[in-house]
Image (cartoon, rainbow, N blue to C red):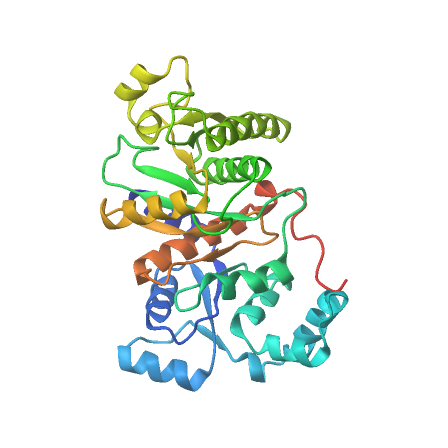
Length: 351
């Protein structure tokens, strides 16, 4: 709660509007209630108002201060559908298909983001990842100069010797199954930039592997992490991002100073990493879930990296507390999003 408590305090100073497309999901309703109670801004629920009210009544959750929008009857429906058609017509989308898509809350919520009717979006509590990401990729799109849209998980563990006083940023844990060298470098830089923004300290990025500096037999994945480390350093320097990158290294060498001293020398990252970059989605997703389940860590994600507007795809196993924390992180991102992604959000769809 140390980290997320600080995030909540920051958001209380700059309240935001966060849209939740899964408006009748009980955990979303509970998180939205807390969002308003903590004065974080205005939670926006999408869905059938009657169904949302019925669920809220069953849970004895007040809807005071919570905005509810039914996409099907919204006064913006026609405008949103027309904009989606203009954005996707070259891909073969027809006007009828655009209108059908805009009836889906995730599409409607994505359009709210780019039309500045919401400052951030959180979905995924009851939808699979593809249903959350597809509208965002089609409507919100990637920020300028971003080679790969990815995601990270922010974890907070009890042991304050780990990471940055118990906080770790882990990526990519939710989007790219087999990242290339270029994509790994983009993931590392994007995660380092977010960690620097959220923690207020220099990011120390470990490119993790089953090997430490070639300690294991040669394998293509080792060479990939070594090449990605070099590319990430170069790109971060070009973008003036305050971060150190090192790898490849095993997870114990990344997090435990005593082990790092035995395995590496002259590393600004080893034993002190606050950002972990995994070689593929298998390792990243498994590691992040293990930290949450076995380590009993608070896990907030997936925070999407590289989009033109801030959004998150939360886990279907997320608790109301997790969802509240994710929404707070998304909200704080939106406060200085231009600093995270210079040039982001300059173009609206269909213009």
